[in-house]
Length: 130
Image 1 (cartoon, rainbow, N blue to C red):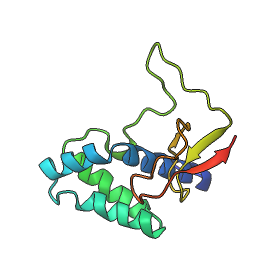
Image 2: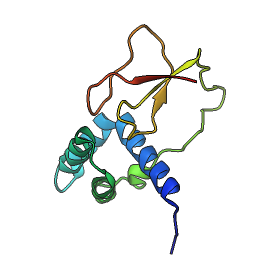
Image 3: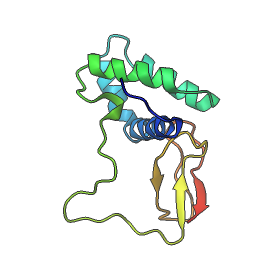
């Protein structure tokens, strides 16, 4: 039995949402090709995120759907905080771009005058000073 503090669970959930957001097209294609319910679990999660509701149950359902479709790691498949050998993380000017709703732990560095848009809600990413 694993006992997890709320902060740990919230961090894990945000990381899982970030993993999904960064791989929407691939997850959708995998589920459409191999999932029993097609992309429905992904669309259910996206709807919950757009509505601002707790995505935990839908993340769990998406995780199970990915496992059943042959993805060995599901929504927890990303290695966190690692950079490929020979590269380093970009250094921000003084700003970081974050999820507009705060439900995802993804981030990126500004590289132009306009912020990229959220993959789920199509809103501009939120700029925050470091």
